Amino acid sequence: MSDGERNDTLAKLKDAVNGESLPGAPYRSWVRGEYHLGTPEDIPTPRCHFFDEHGFVFIERFCDADEVLAMKDEMSLVVEEEWDPSANRTQVFRTDEKQVDAQAVSDYFLDSCNRTAFFAEKDAIIDEKTGELKEDYKSNKILALNKVGHGTHTSDGAFKDYTTSEKVRSLLRELGWKAPVVPQSMYIFKQAKIGGEVTSHQDSTFLFTTPRQTCVGLWLALDDATVDNGCLWVRPGSHREKVRRQFIRNPEHFGETLDYKKGTGVDRSQPQMIFKQLEDDGSVGWEGKLPENLKDEGFIPVPCKAGDLLAFVGTLDHLSLPNKSSRARHTFQLHCVEGEKENVTWSKENWLQYPEGVPFMEL
Ligand SMILES: O=C(O)CCC(=O)C(=O)O
Image (cartoon, rainbow, N blue to C red; front, top):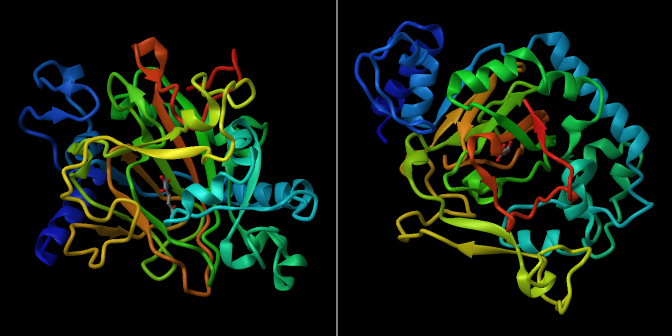
């Protein structure tokens, strides 16, 4: 993508958010299939139109300073009160070539699906085998964290208030979801100096639904996010590509039931999770990696102020670079999918499975 095209995309984005450009012709909606303009209720808002066209939309000041502060304060308290790095082996979170190994060391990752679990930065740990924090982080443990997940939205408090807020519910409906549910949430710290990269991926790899992909990410900046401190980069239009791989529970490890509490005939020496290759014509060489030249491959950075929101489709390529700056970049993410009421099924192969009979939160 040339600089001119990139600027054009960003200018359209601004227009869409400001409501200055109304769609004039029928177009193919990502989430609803073929879109027919004509009746008033068929006409999407400008930002929904932009979202369908490019796979993401940027919404300025989605949350105010008080909401942002409430979430940051609550996370500090949760870490202070609930995370004891010395009590259990601390698990590291990474998305590089060691991703599968890092998450397969215990059931901690699997058990994190509907509670608050803590994952450290690899560079804050002396040795990933022991999980011991480096001395510098022992007295200020929050600085060692990569992320907290994946059920932060389920506990009473600021995160649940935000998740269940009218503005989140109505945004999802505006973008085309009819019966959205929330399989997961994450608080990402992207720490100053040591905040690791998030390699290029499609969220539907991890949040796979059938018969169609319905994942949408709501990425809320809790600090200003810039190119220097690791803002998100997206590849506009890539949402129209197929999901290339699925992160699944490994039947060789868990047995055919894929239930790690009940599995029979399993081989626990095999990795817990594996990537299953789906559609991959080899044209995208950066899946699970960082492209060498982001701009040449069509990625654009999306800098945000604290309180701004980026909503994007589960098939959109996105990534973030390591944070080498002296400013942390906190964010809170919700990942939603269309619910069963819309005849959409959560894949039984996905790593994240709630205990039997416990539903995802409906919005
Ligand atoms: O915030 C980041 O660095 C990555 C977030 C991400 O990949 C996501 O929200 O799906």
